[in-house]
Figure (tube, one colour):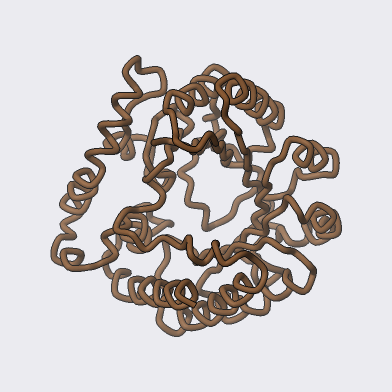
Length: 347
């Protein structure tokens, strides 16, 4: 039932990106006791395929590299004890990534996602706390990242104001020789049709490249079921120890996300709470839509199959609240992205 655990290790970060989805309280970081309990919860659920996944994010998790290593050690230990293969991944902004850490990640079998949106233009929303462009720091690390390209994934987030340049920014990393690249349209902003059209062209280029560089199973795996892929077999633990079915609730303040929590990791009956939460999740989303008075807008929309594509596209990241005027343009982008995915999946 549950084969993946996503852990938000910390809300602390060494950057000041203006598009970060994570609601931050700089004092919040999971303790070792909380981390161990989170991992134990993952293994409460037997799965048909003896494989578990632990994904670590933040904030910037490499600020607590010792805890990352302890997550690996404890997760591997329990997995081996119970006959499971346990895979690990981490997402980092790359600032603290060096050869020593990459050697350790490679030996441990980690997949390392590095958030880097492009060069100077593409990275305009990614700044250090003193206002410097992050690419100015990361460009000198690209040869090192290429050396470990078998474990590194370049994670690009494209904003509307740089969408015009996004295809060239994507091809820059392709030409450099990176073999694993992911592409994501920025959430929490309005996507006007003109900028969305630029992004769609880039995304089609990306899918064509994917088709050439990965197995056909990747394109076949693109999920078009009426169940959000984020909630099918995962749980997400936030920095407070809340168990949530989706990491996108990190958009909300700590108080606002409580309503959608399955419980706390230290609840004695947390397994039963998660099972019940999974069963009632569609009801929760209906309540979510009703709370927002969204029924008229979303009643007949096929995209209600994935709440992430509903509330993310109507969320104003800067104001941390919903702006329903975003919906027409942003759903136009989403529907056209689905058409592209479907086209390349069928072929």
